[in-house]
Length: 245
Ligand SMILES: [Zn+2]
Image (tube, rainbow, N blue to C red; front, side, top):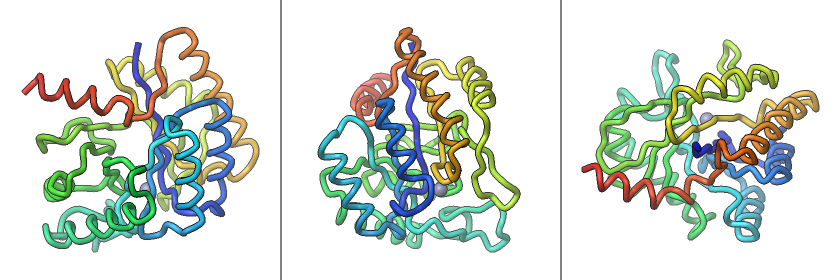
């Protein structure tokens, strides 16, 4: 049996195409989601919506921090990162702290101390800052992070592709399934799946994702996986982490 978590990135506005269809679909199939919120772009209505839904049903999703404003600070443009080379300790500290302040203002007592770096970009300084600021966990595409004391929650595959300019584009159900099966072999206990709701611009993309959600539900019914919020397993991960030290 494996634990499976889903992460949905770039949450900041209810009015953004794809967000509400995704939120509704995940709720309908009782699939727990880690919503990675961009604090610097978050609007008040969206914050209130998430806060209220969370309080109604706190086990159905997690709210976590996705950088500050999701800006690209690489002077050479690629690879994109908000936090990474050329951004020194104090600059990273200040920006991530600013993001935390906004998270705290809107989601006090509700959000979880997981940091998701925009574009999966980070360096050793980012990890030090994140740890220093009290985050418990870090989630990117990196399976190994050196910083001690941070729980690593990498995702193994994405339920979308990327266009040349970097914006997420949808993939068909059969490709989702292929990636799931490949990842199943790689990951022993914890399987992270990344999604970008912005790809759900038309009903056919929603339909393909719904097929995958149905598949996940069947996998869970067979006892092969357990769909979880990351916060529900964080205490366990922490205890196991301590045992290993
Ligand atoms: Zn992002």
